[in-house]
Length: 553
Image 1 (cartoon, helix red, strand yellow):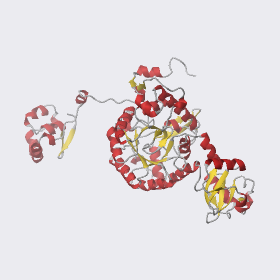
Image 2 (image 1 turned 120 degrees about the vertical axis):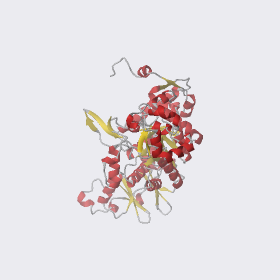
Image 3 (image 1 turned 30 degrees about the horizontal axis):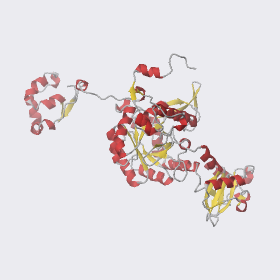
Image 4 (image 1 turned 60 degrees about the vertical axis):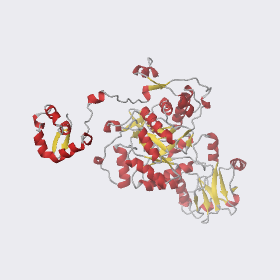
């Protein structure tokens, strides 16, 4: 009865508006209202006779239904959502003898397979070039954030793609007439130790390394040409045409080479093989690679019209998957952006989201999504549920969305709420095929930002992409404007403990997930999902699950 609605130009109680059409209810309704809100039926009829007659003729179905009061809701079954700490997985008989027997190979999208289920989040304090390279080298994948210019994001995609490759198809080159000073600038800018020297027609002339110019004085560097210090083509050892892996390794070992240029019959440069890439192929057999042997990388895009140009530029740069970055993916903006991207780039894999319901997952699948990102408000730096009052606890959201996407054979990415390797196991058991991490990776060497000292401890900054800081930074970069009053933040900024190299974090998480899969009686993610049985636990059960009754060292 406390709710009011606008009837023509007058504010009246909603219950009075609905019931006054039927005279038999008039007195019982009016009795419950204060004199200030009371109005006789005849007076109301005189003021709004045409509208009331039309509503009465249409019948009760045309009227607004009375909102449920708290008592109405209390008498009905209200669904309960659960998250990671509410449940445990029940151990099953396991055939696993060693964690090495467990395979973590899984799908990121319908068409992309990765070798462990960890994806680094598209946050500006988590994933840029270094993190994306590290994630792919360890079998996962990184998603570059979009809070930068298109040119900067494209450059990061290029950097990841060049970081490792069996054959570098377009190695860096310069002309023999360039000076040593220009060579030094190029080495510093590109982050490489050597550059090939070619003619304008692409014919290979030589190679120059940082060792060749190390002791050239600065005063001579501006005048001395590269042709004077390079190793000329007459002394080069090169591969002819397409050289196999074993053949390249034998040639490099026999001639003690770090670089093996590849040339065609006319001595035109067609590629480059490096000893570093060959070593990486042996040291990291589980890397996430594309069909050309390059590291895979994803990139985030928005849902505005100008983001289509960004998406096209990223696709041309070799990006493997585009991730639509919108807080409420189950909206016309999210669905239409998914459909538009798939229409413009039919061969590009698109991950859409974020959603938290089966209906949301189904709508995005219908729009053409190749992967669904699940999570509304579970992240440590996300306050969407507080600001909007909306969301679904993450484990329930993952399970529901997996059910919605399963008929379309579209994999689910659990985005947010993960704090331990056990949470990853639970998310996978509930139906996800990968998990996206932010907070857990933000404090590493590979995450953007400097290491700070607070309270005598080393920390790094982490912030939500719907918060003030990230949006103001993006707005300033793209438009030059920075108006705090235009923003309604759904994220916060904070600090996390500095954790060192990300490789240590990934090894610990991967080891925990392998153990979790074996406890569930599986040897891979799919078999674990088939065997998974969840058990609800109490607060005492949660307390018992952690260390207790001891003082930790």
